[in-house]
Length: 538
Image (cartoon, rainbow, N blue to C red):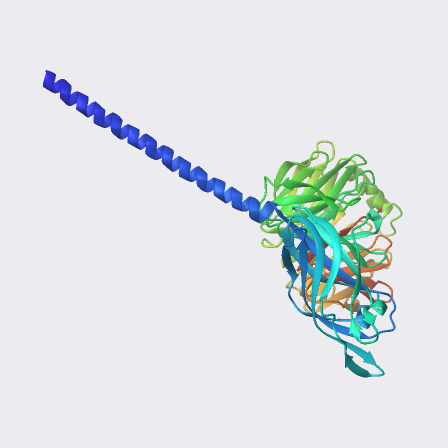
């Protein structure tokens, strides 16, 4: 009996010993795992959250009597503790006459947050042209530096604006010592501002459309694409869709600073955005989620997603019905059609979604009282839809098709009556490679943006002249064209209806075009691979 007890005692000791070893082994593993997580978190904090962004823009005086060219090799920015960071390393040739009254982006980079006291410029050579002859200019032996006093905040963009005083940059007729006057960002009137998302710069360029100058850059999330502005005057805001970080950045236009970032819970790879004004006090944000085939609905008052609406495959672009007041005075709708539309809008408004992969348009009927979706209709457009525009004056939605020579036309009145089969027609012979569409009721024209080659096609809209063509128009609707930049992605008409702004994704700039003369009046540099554009309409 005693032998059995001794054996059992040894067995229990072995078992408990093994359990203790396993316990300590698990504790050790947990310590290693948590330590690993901590180190990853520390890495994220050191490489991400401590970073800010700096943009440096150079502008020439409106007039100068000197024709000077210099090659800028690099730009460094020096912190208050003497640390030097290179922010520009791609050589660029700068000419005083070409730069007169214009602005160029010479540097843009993420750097450590902190205070910076100096900028250093490396110039390889400088030339002056007199009487048709070029002569070399001497460079200062001590180098070229500009004193600054700026603070780069983490997760914020700091923009520095340099004015080049050309006439003061020539010393004794032979020495090139450039005079750069540094200006910082100042508050701007929101109604004068244009906002452009830059997908590969992770920021938004802010342009004063009256001056044609960049006045700020706002650091947002990863891969910003779609952009929209609120419609209320009381609290204007800019909303940016970050496709790479699955979030919405909210910008305060009175300061042009990031106010908050809204995480997306219901969708993946958000892309397009539209804002519907339900009442003077309430707005809803609609965001297409390309990766999850749905639309997120966000309440502006709470910045929370309140609904997920399933749509077609690959939703990209989105638009909403404007306020019903926008059809007042229309010359395109009959009295009965106008009353029918007003009656519908007392209860509902529509959201229109371009589904790129399933080649259809989802029409979401939203209930005004509950602010919830009431019905989703999918309308086949057969081709390759990529963009759309709502023409409420005519009661039409125009859908641009990328790889097909036709513009799809959806009849809003037929949709409100539930008649989807007779709701789609087409305007043919408009060209292919279309990436954007806007309407102009003042000129009774539609502007289509083509990316290959980069141009705007001006066409006649659907009208009674072509009423005999029930589904297509055999006659060419094109009445003109305007050449733009490389790989244009989006376009916008200003609230006054005088200028068209085109985002050129391949040439990293925005064209300002006079709608009447069809001439490019300004070329405004922006960030890398710009995508979307928005401005306030009030």
